[in-house]
Length: 67
Image (cartoon, rainbow, N blue to C red):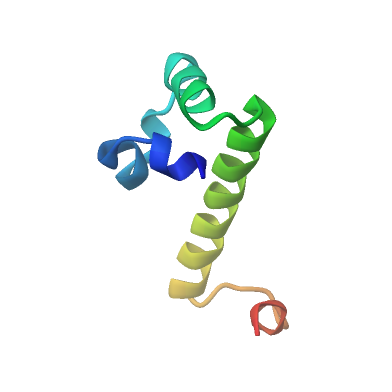
């Protein structure tokens, strides 16, 4: 799993992951660069949803998708 190839700081704050860090994660985990990019994009999307939920601004029915 490529999360284990990330440093603790990168896991806490994925926004610091630039090109050189992505290459290191790809080399260390044996996955494709697209896989790392996909994980980071999914994390960002979930993070946005969580912030919207905390503010009570989720679209109706959105929570049903997670049940």
